[in-house]
Each structure stands twice: as C-alpha cells, then as structure tokens.
Amino acid sequence: MSKLGLGIIFAAGLSALVAGSATAADLSTPVYKAPAVEEPLSPWQIRVRALYVVPEAGGSVTGIPGSDLSISNSVVPELDITYYFTKNIAAELILGVTPHDINGAGTITSLGQVGKVWLLPPTLTLQYHFTDFGPFKPYIGAGVNYTAFFSQDATNPAFSSLKVNDAWGFALQAGFDWMIDRHWGFNVDVKKIFLQPDFLLQTVGGAYLQGSAQINPWIFGTGVTYRF
Image (tube, rainbow, N blue to C red; front, side):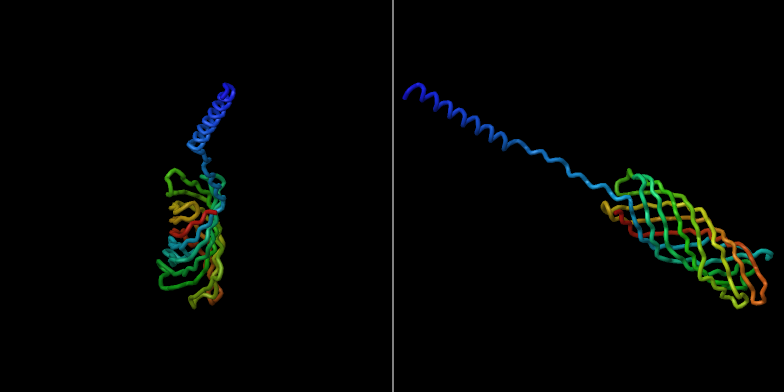
C-alpha cells in the first residue's frame, strides 16, 4: 500500500477517535436546568371565622343615678376580605352580624331584659404582617368601625319601642395565620372595638328615656385562611 493510502487511513481513524471522545464528553457533561419560577401570590385573601363577641356591657340611663346596662355575649360566623398592598401592608374588611340582649343593671336591674337588637359592624383595619417566621405569620392592625343597629325590639312590657343609634368606633387588632401551604392556613384573631352608641326608650305612657351604652366588645375569632 502506498504512503498516500496509509496517510488517508490514519487521518480517518484519528477523526473517528476525536469524534467519539467529543460525544462521550457531551454525554458526561451535566445538563443545567433553570430553577422553576414560582408564580407570585394574588393580593387577595379571604377568611371564614367563628367569632365569640364579648361586650364590655356598661352604660347608663340619663337622670337615673346608679343605672347600668348588661349586654349578652354572642357566637356568630364571619367573613373577612384582605388586600395586600405589599407583602407586609394589607387592609382587611370584616363582615358579619351579631344578636344581643340588653338588660337593666345597677339600680335598674329589676327591669330585667329591656330589649333585643342586631348589630351590623363592618370594620376596616390597616395591618402590618410580619413575614420572617416561616409558616407563622403574625400581624397587628388598627382601623375604624361603623355599627348599624337593626331589628330593634323592646321586650319589657313597660316600654313600647327601643332605638339604638348607629355609631362610629375605633378598632385594634392582633392575630396570626399558620400557613399549611402557599394558599391555605389556620387563623386566630383578637379585636377590641370601642363603641358607645346612644339609645332611646319609649315607655307605654309615651315618656322617653335616653342614655348611652358602652358596648366596647372584645371579639375572639378562629377560622380558615385562603390566599388566592
């Protein structure tokens, strides 16, 4: 065989060897995969809670020394809607209704139950959420409350009507979410609402009694959180 033929065979073999080495190197090189990008959470969140409403239960009837009021506790369901402006700052709107009995106390204890009333107390709070504790998400808040009173009935035969005036109040709040995953969590919440509406009672004889009720309820809640 000529020197030219041997050169061609040698060159072909060398090319095959180089190609095989390159292929093996390609197969052994790890393939880099970019980490999966987690979609950002929606700014909207809802909670469904059970509330235990405990009024401070005080007040007085104008012109009757030592008069006082007692207001019953209540257990009700509640819905709240939260919007996150940032990961730490949010606004929460609390929606629910609560029924209460109003009873005489102090020097008017003998009146017994004076009336029944339902409260619609929407409350808007601005919150700060702490985000550095893993699944534990505590928060604090403060805001305003506007309470509307409806289904007002005088239940004592000495009175023909009861009127409790709608009123504004101030609210403080603290609580936490324990997040099970990105969307679902367990919530515990406590609020204090400062609420002191005026009221008017009409007797069966046509006379009027007026005064102020110091409702000022503590609201203890627990329920389920869902972040969209």
